[in-house]
Every structure is written in C-alpha cells, then in structure tokens.
Amino acid sequence: MLAHAQPVSSLPELTNFSTPSISFMLQIGMFMAFVVVGTYAFAKFKQTRFSLKTKNKPSQLSILETHALGNRQYLLVVAYNQQKFLLNVHPNGTQYLCTLNNTYDKKQHTHESMDKCP
Image 1 (tube, rainbow, N blue to C red):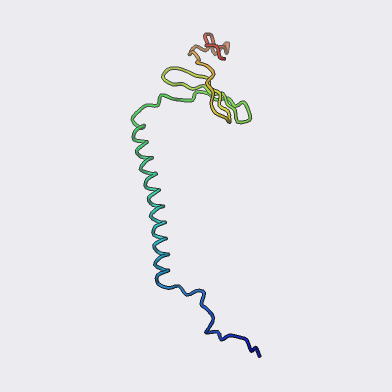
Image 2 (tube, rainbow, N blue to C red):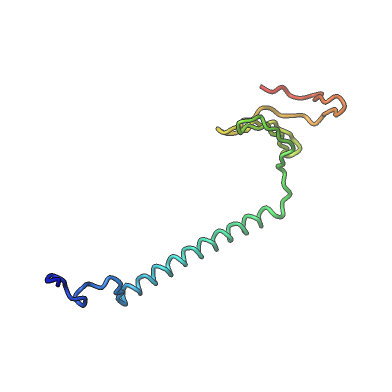
C-alpha cells in the first residue's frame, strides 16, 4: 500500500471558520448594507429637495424645435424669457449662433426680421 500517505485526520481543514471571522464578515456585510441604504436615502433627499425648489417656479427655458444635422449634431431653437436663440449642439459642446425674432410668416416660410447669424 501507500507508505507515505497521511492519515485523513491530520489534513488541514479549509472550511473551518472561526467565530471571529464570521463576526468580521457580518460586520463587513452590515457596513456595505449601511453604505447602500445611506447612498439611496441621500440621493432621494437631494432629488426631493431639488424638485421642491423648482416645482413652484414656472419653467422659463424650453426647447421649441430641433433639427438633426447628422453625426450627433443638432440645431436647436431655444426660448428663454420671451427670447429665442439658435444653438448648434455637437459632440464637443454647444455653440450660440444668433438671437431670433418672433416674426415668422408661415405662408412664405421666411423670417421677416431675423438677426444675422455669424
């Protein structure tokens, strides 16, 4: 038979968890749960607080029209405080083009008094 075989009782037990290691794992688990719950509560608090600030105020900013130019580029007509602006949105940022006047003739499809864009 095998002369060098060790008895089974002398092999180290790999699954032997002592009480301090179980306690440590429970503490780590409770800490992680506390972090997740705390982060969720903080995010909800900030969201609620932000919505309370803006809920009572009417929005003065609105996007009136969009036109896709391709390759993630858009032209936007944005209204803010009774003024209209033409903006160019592209992957590197947003560019102001010009201020638009409110007169528009739908029959002729022309802007009668539009400020010149650069």
